[in-house]
Image (tube, rainbow, N blue to C red; front, side, top):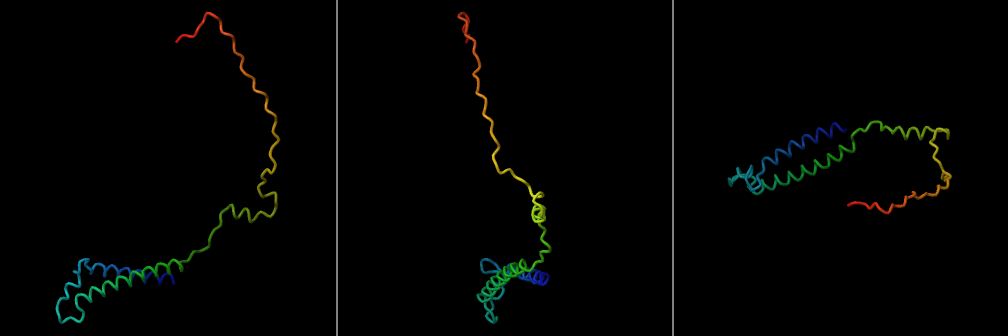
Length: 127
């Protein structure tokens, strides 16, 4: 199904490119070639047709992109190694053991202030 949607998506893209290239933003392009009064579709109707065709193909492109992403084959989804270890752990000893109690804290030794030697009377710090 995805292959079919991809092929149709490619065809829609080609048609959309062709229609956009035929248009001219100022009313020229393919519509400017049909100025004869004997034409079945006049200048304005050709421009309207190209504009509506652009919108239809753009909408079809959007729908096909969404349908393609919904029908893409995903294959087997692999689990992470951690998920496999947790699911395969049947024995409690295989599961990680985290500490539940806070460790006993020992009283800290009182901080001793460093002893300072008294300054001698003669020496003064120099600046």
